[in-house]
Length: 343
Image 1 (cartoon, rainbow, N blue to C red):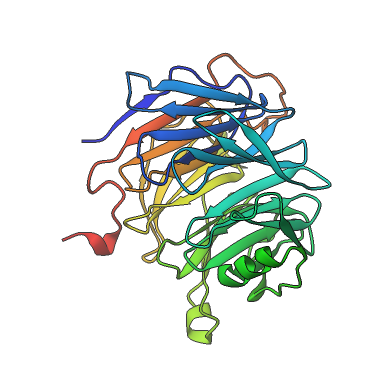
Image 2: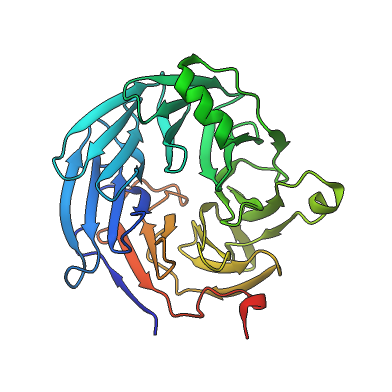
């Protein structure tokens, strides 16, 4: 059976990220424009339990778990990348960019933390050497960051996409200073408009990206002509209102860690599940009361968290009461299975 509930204690300003712990499927981090990171135990009691919240000097744009369920990393509008000890509450600044930091990602096998900023750089942090980091120059502002077991994908402002090998980034992090790390591949987005989100396939084969103009593209890493001919893009998160086609940004993408299908979340308040290989929509969920900003699956694939808050697509700056919520859905065994997985 599948079931869904909303967390009882939600942030007071729009949600920027949700992230499940690497080991526990009930430990969840949420970052918000209200300058806090929230730690929940989603199953401790009905509506989940707010375990702790951690104040920051400015809006928090991203958060992720670290090497275990008691370590987190945050990034935001104060330009700083922080480590948070979730048990003691101690916050440590690891590096400072020269503009807002949009994304953070931790690779446990590589002992590596990567932050991506609007200052057009990556900071590479070797977690065995706190306070030391290396800088990688990017051709444009970083908008979204994702990783597979061996690759890091950075989507940027000029529709360019850089793909790096995590092994080489980990080596550069140990050296410190300005790192001359060349991308494994450089690509241009197959979509005409600005990239909003990227997410890697868990099988290390490729990634999906989404745009502000209601489209998702699916691509494979393999540079061979045969593999590149498989890439495609499709329209989604659109509505027809009084005969007019309304197009929404696709804000969130997340691959299911077991089945390899993926979820998309849009400014239309809809979450849909897709089979990337067979190019079909598996299901679409009931519309949420505001824009879907962020999505994450638990490591065992049994739960999905969805951060919902106004994206101001309608031009209004007002935040209606009850519009900012985190929803947790428990997935049935077959709910996120693709076509080929069915027996």
